Image (tube, rainbow, N blue to C red; front, side, top):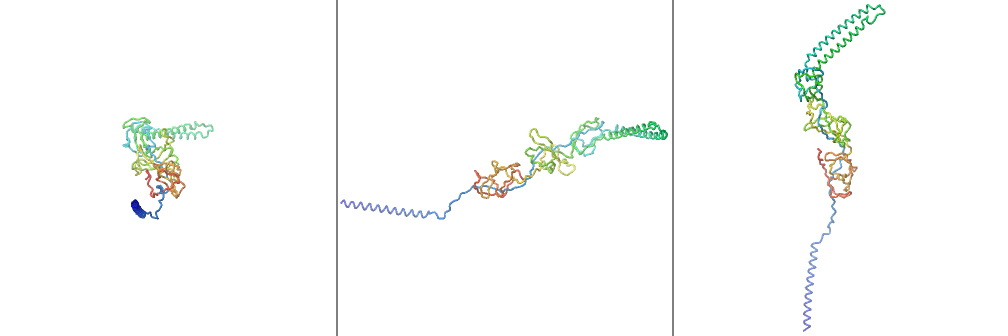
Length: 389
C-alpha cells in the first residue's frame, strides 16, 4: 500500500514539472516574438555634435570722411557807434534809423543843420579869393622890381620882393586848406552808413543838439556774420588746415554754407574747449535769395574733417572688452584687439583688421572662446547704425 502511495506522488510531481516546462517555453517564445517586433534597424546613424550659432557680416573696409558736429550763436563781426565829427542840431533822420531797421551802404542815416557850416564855407571861399588876389599882386610887384634892379649887382631879395611873394603863397595855401576843411565840415553834417547795416540802438531824436563824437546809436555789419563754435580737444586732431570751406550750417529747415576761418586763441576756462570762428557771408540775405539767419540765432554746423583711410565703422556693442570677434574661414572664433580712432554717435571707427577673408561677428554665443568652432548665420544686409542716415 505504501508503494502505491509513492507512485501517486511521483506522477503528481511529474505533472507539475511538465506544466512548468510548458509555461517556460511559452514565455521564451513570447520574448523572442517581442524582440523581433522591437528590433533596431541595422542602418541607424550616430548623432553628430551641434556647434553654437553666431551671426556675422562681411568686413567692409572703407575711407571715412570725418564730420565735426558743432554749434554756436551767430554774432555780428563788426559794429559801429553812430556819431558825428561836428556838433550841431539834428534836423533829419532816416526812417530805417530805428532798432531793427536795415540800411544800405552809403545811405544817409542822420543830418545836422548845415547853416553854420555853409556860412563857414562861404567865408573860406572869400579868404581864398583874397589870398589869390594878394599873390597876384605880389607877383606883379616882384616883376616890376626885377626890371628896376636888373642892372644892380648888389640887389637884395627884399628889393626884389621875394619874401612878400613867399608870404602871399603861404597865405594862399592856408586859404585853400581852410576851404577844404570847411567843405569837409559841411559834408560831415550828414552821417552815411559805412556798410549794409542793422540798427541795434538809437539814442537821439529830431531837434537834439549834439556834440562832437556823441553817440547817436549803434549799427552792425550785415556783410557777414561770425559763428563762434567750441571744439573739444579730442576733435582737434581731425580738423584739417584752415580755412575749411563748405561748412554746412543749419537751423530748423534753414541751410546755409560758411567757412571755418580761424582760431580765436582762447580756451574756455570751464570746459577747456578751443573756440573757432565760422564766417557766414550775407547772413540776412540782402543780396541773394537764400533763407536769412539772424544774429543771436542758435545754429548747428557740420565741418568736414580729415579722411580716415582703411577703417571700419561698426556699432559700439560689437566690441567686447576692447576686442572685436571675427569668424575665420574654418568657422572658428578669432579675437582682434581694436584700435578705436573715433566715436560717432553709437558707432566707432577702428583700424581695419588684416583678415580680409574673415567676417565680423554681430551676435556671440553665451561663453565665447578663441578658436571655438561655431556655425554662422551670415547677415547679407547691413542695417543702418543708429544715428546714421
